[in-house]
Image (cartoon, rainbow, N blue to C red; front, top):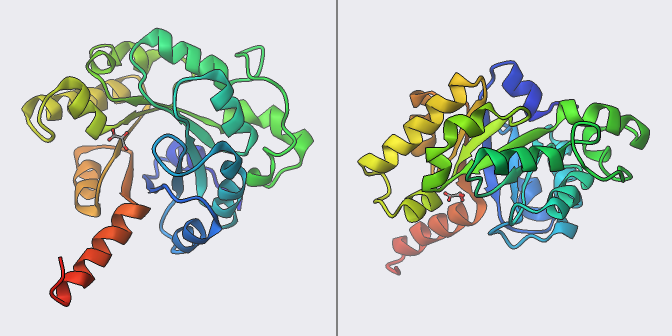
Length: 252
Ligand code: 3PY
């Protein structure tokens, strides 16, 4: 299947994904084969995943019709290039604070003349099921440019960031947002910042997305109007499930 998350979002389908922090094919294949997900976040920022893992992980996702989205460690041009050349269907860049940051990020994601992305698509087409020569012409229209709103300045500038041409998704990192704003997670200021980001994304016709720790949180965010959620992390699910089993034999 050549399904991409961008198509799904354009068709007003909800984006439902999970966070992958483990390298290697085993965990990603076990989870994407469940069905029900249309995207997977390959976490090169906080996960145990390096840029030479992206290619295998992206292609494992694609085999089950799940769009691979790579989160890079930092807003750096070469990191975006590595992720896109591995076949990511979109790159998530953390810590976007200003419209200027957003414009730079868009430029790094797009081929000339729109942007400055370097040319080297030998491996990028695999995860789209297209030949090398067919990838570049479609890339700019097919890929999602995703920025994380997760700081006080990011929220203060969110209306301007949302309006930047080429930004597709505003993705809230609620944990960093709480830390960076120095406000309690789930408290009034935190929730107001989240609501402001949601409204700014929609006012600009962009996708509003948020990280969630579990399915209950994710269901609430969808109910609130978010278009795209991650429902859990691989390591979170494994450790919580194991803890619950341990508790049944009296260990905790
Ligand atoms: C955050 O909540 O800060 C994230 O970026 C998701 O891991």
